[in-house]
Length: 127
Image 1 (cartoon, helix red, strand yellow):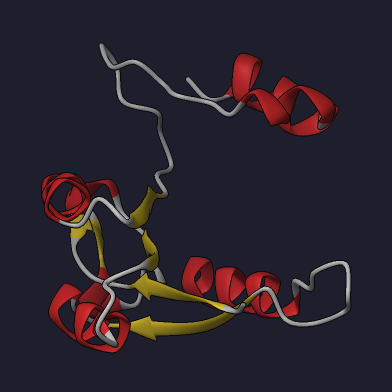
Image 2 (image 1 turned 135 degrees about the vertical axis):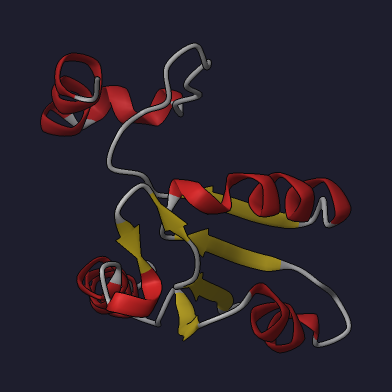
């Protein structure tokens, strides 16, 4: 079963703004990489689309189930992301950020232990 992945290119953080296109490179890279992902049978893992608002993304995901994956491209959308996750527990919500927030717990999947470069970068270079 193919999952729907909604990438929301909206918001701002500090000097970075969607309206100036500051998140476009990240958004395009996410679409490119996630669109190429295939399962063990060579089938696409997901259907990936970008949206300029959470409302548009949720309408696309709604399809009667409100399941899928939502990716925000800026820390400035953290409150929206948290609310969306609470209101839609069947969604998997990600938030990409250039800097890991201070005084916050960082949750990491145990599976990352098998990805040496990612593990090293996360632990030693994310702060």
